[in-house]
Length: 465
Image (cartoon, rainbow, N blue to C red; front, side, top):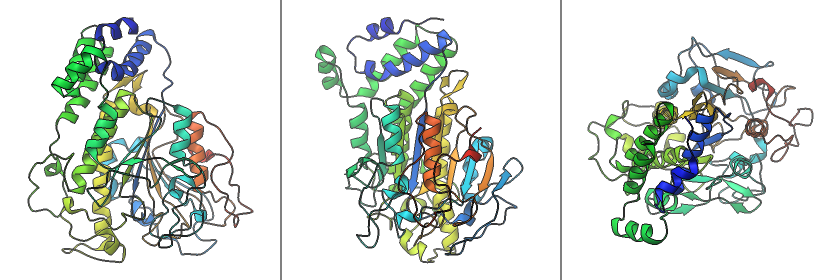
């Protein structure tokens, strides 16, 4: 059926919901008209304190941490289908999407310097001197999420959400940037994030009513139901998914009781996770808010920071029943019979449970001939590269999504070691993402001066369909 988006918006008057329904109505109108879908979205989940490469290898794939020297790793590119492989413990939550999963190993980022955190260099593939305990906090160029935001645009071209080890932290600048010395904010307080994104009211009578009612969610749900009444079939499914997303925002109680494999004997008392001092509550809330922002269409580039940056690498995940911080874990600390490796896996698994929840929400929203997830890439990595005291010889990443078939997924790939002829860097990975977004370029970040015989330009052809 055809939907006149202008008439639909007119029926919403000056309601606060009109701002957020406009992107949805545009998608509904395009779908009804049979127009091709051009939306592309990118989500970056950046966790602190490193990812050991051997912990991402699927069953049957022997993978050791490479020695801290040149010319290590395989001689040839390794490409293993995931179809018949069991995923490692920490990635099990996304096993249902194995055909859209790509585990990427072997990329280096030596220019970033290493240490407890590479800060802006993690997404920027650059380094700018040493400072603040040995880790660079300078910003010499744009980061990949900042570059994608410029290209894709949106009401919020880039949205940064995350958590700090300090519950009182409201906003910080840690991993994202739009250019030299131009950091992009990471909102660490879920209530602040909600207000910043969904605190826009209409003018006139609508603004007065909003002030009196003081609940934008009620406006949005009413407006969605009103607009939904004018459509049918697949278009109505989009409004149903929209409505469910906002219902999730209304449920501010912790869902930690549903998390398995933790060390908690009893789950915490349900609380308002927007205001919780428990870091897992707040990260859960930020994923909810980020999902709503994507579904609404107010952003196409979302960065979710889990205590990334030098200030927070020693966070303690008390919500998972742990009473040992990530710094101690990185130095081999154990807890209640769990080794440092077990604890790393436990914490990472929680992040992939949140990622799985995000995927489910995006899959419920029809778009084109598929869903929103078909046009979304979720990239997981650590700001600490391959270890607690990283040297960035390699930088493990996990990508979920195939961007409408343009990204070859369902694979475990391992690039030749640092210094070998076919070796590639994180800059090549970020050029791949920019290529998928339609922002084709040959270079990104700072070239590694010690890789003179290695091609550091262009995307990773091995990942593109």
